[in-house]
Amino acid sequence: MTTDEREQLLAILQARFEHHPQRHPGLAWETLARRLDGKPAALATLAAMEASGGEPDVIAHDPEAATILFCDCAAESPTGRRSLCYDGAALGARKEAKPRGSAAEMAAAMGATLLNEAQYQMLQELGEFDLKTSSWLDTPPALRSRGGALFGDRRYGRVFVYHNGAQSYYAARGFRTALVV
Image (cartoon, rainbow, N blue to C red):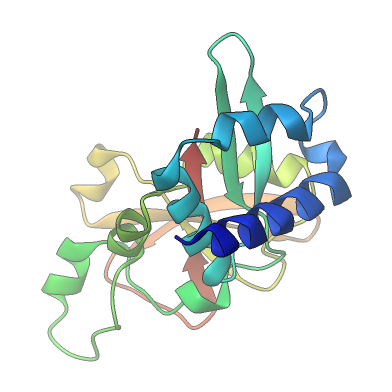
């Protein structure tokens, strides 16, 4: 990442951070900027989240553990990350009409993880997300070993988390990522 790209990304993140203070009460931009300073891998992940339409922002911070949680805060599941099955095993198991990839593999390539169920619920407490789309969620091994995977959305004024076959994919289902810095 060049110095100009870094500065441009930080400007985007700062503008979003300042526009949505309800997502991270008690956290100052200066604290976050210091935390990101000297972390090129984290900046590269945030750049990938931004480039694929995720609109990353901070949704939680723990001063005692010195951690800050970024996640995709785009209103809908990012367009650049839809029509994917859940993971590489699901992709490999499809015999025909394979999607272009999998959510878990794409998230890992970005240096991030899929949001887990608790993180997704936390995000949904900060606003209304996935009103027209849905997002794959990190799935516990016991469920995944049976062929299923979790996804979430918001319909009828409430948040739903449910399951689907991991091999399935839909034009309106993508994924949201998390990054702990």
